[in-house]
Amino acid sequence: MRNGVIAKTEMLPPISLSEMSGIKLMNRTDTKFVATMKQLNEFLLAVQGKYYIQQHNNKRIASYHTVYLDTPDYIMYTMHHNGKTRREKIRVRTYLDSKDTFLEVKNKNNHGRTKKKRIAVQGVETLLEERETIVPFLAKHAWYKLENIKPACENRFSRITLVNYGKTERLTIDFDLRFHNLVTDDRENLEGVAIIELKRDGNVPSPALNIIRDLRIRRSGFSKYCIGSALTNKGLKRNNFKERIKFIEKLEKQTT
Image (cartoon, rainbow, N blue to C red; front, side, top):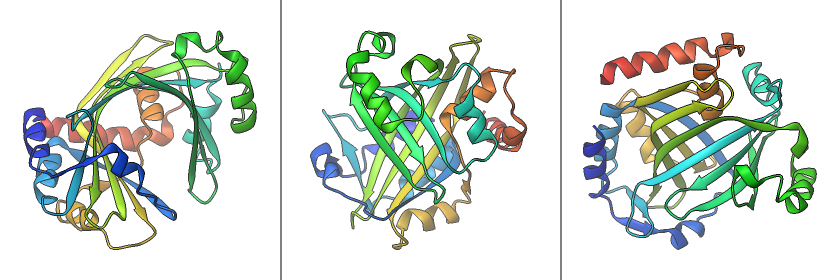
């Protein structure tokens, strides 16, 4: 399946990282969908002639490594699980192709809008050594102090980024998801599903949304931190994620 995805990305015209950075979605709405790898292949065929694909250093599929931090009692995970509209995630993300690493704070407000702030760091293992810059950064942008959070769960995945010809929306497609819990040491892979996130400027018409509906790809929230943690740490509350996990496992079986 992955080879089919790679082949179909070669059929899309490229857009550079610098051109992508100029696309500002000022009134952005984000919507996530979960697809099988078969549906992803069909989707990539259907967007031909409508979308560019981001290309950087001759690569069209980017590799990511992310470490999520949380409090010892998992407050950030629990707030998401309990459906709190105002919530926060703190992570260290490495863009493996460029080796750039950032400490990122993501805040979601009660209107569903997400704001992200980040600062360059050497890595998750050096956060304490870099506290001179990290402590004031967290004090300004986060709800939690550096001494009150620790690495909880990490993931690795591949990402495709698309932008429509009208440059009014972006799509990120994450697949080959692999999770490792840094507390329990349990691991879980989701190699049969892809997460499609549609980011568009308000309610402008979306070619991708029509294709997603035609392919019957289901809309579903998917937090890589929360789903990864629920799958790899059986000590966490997971009642509100059970139906979502069952749905994901069903899609996995369809692929295999």
